[in-house]
Length: 322
Image (tube, rainbow, N blue to C red; front, side, top):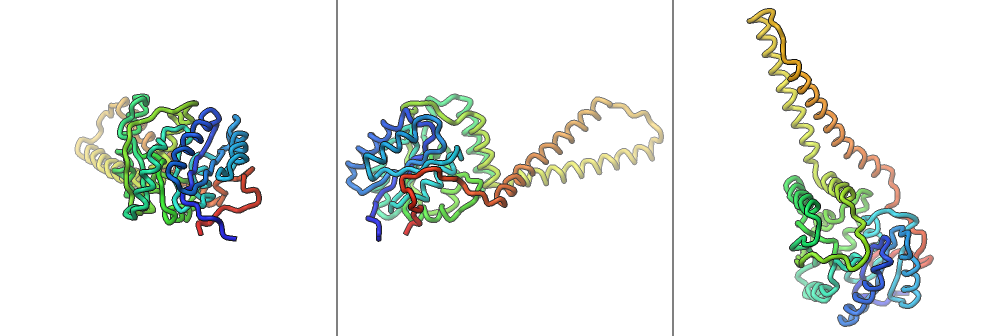
């Protein structure tokens, strides 16, 4: 039996969002009803430890347009995004955070742009970082400058996950089944015509951010390693330079021995500094290579990106986009 046509699916990754979910649901529902399109919600509970799942069960019982997927544990936002896109049935799919930092008021404009046919994806970016800790802003800007220098896949500075895509782009993203995911890079890598919308930074409506500084740092490393081999080039170049320097220095010492003969060798401090420097370079190189090997190791395991503990679909399987 063919499902009724759904124009828009709203995919919402959730992790301990009990406090803000009711406000998010009311706000987005009101916006979509004003748009007058058939729609559905896909809430992905990423192993929340608060009352998020209980609230999602209640919403699904009250509204057939609400569907949810609950993971067996916390698999991370990237897995939640993938699961939401996999379960989405709409001709257009919008990805939003539950904290209302993604303004729902942009949804009608995004949908209208896609309907005009020129673009396949309407993405958003923050034009300012007002309200964000200065140290986080500094490192965020540095990350975007770095990755755009060393990667062939551009990542727009301030890019948010908040976007609306046509079904063909969603299907393309789902074809990329890699275990180590960096969605901001994937959205750019698959291509398609993208329209960017900018807005000022919006504070969370309620609750606390789940992204600590170190989690953001690990996420940045994931993006660099997944979309650039520049770190490996650095290791190779450093090795070549140090090898040539060592060879030249060896030649200098040999010539001194031949020309001068026996001479007193001094410079214990400089020798120790050189040894520590070379040791540091070696450890850094091993660490960089280890980052790539670790990701190869995880990919070869072929583990699932997520495990579903509970779903509003019961025995139904995820939609394949047809």
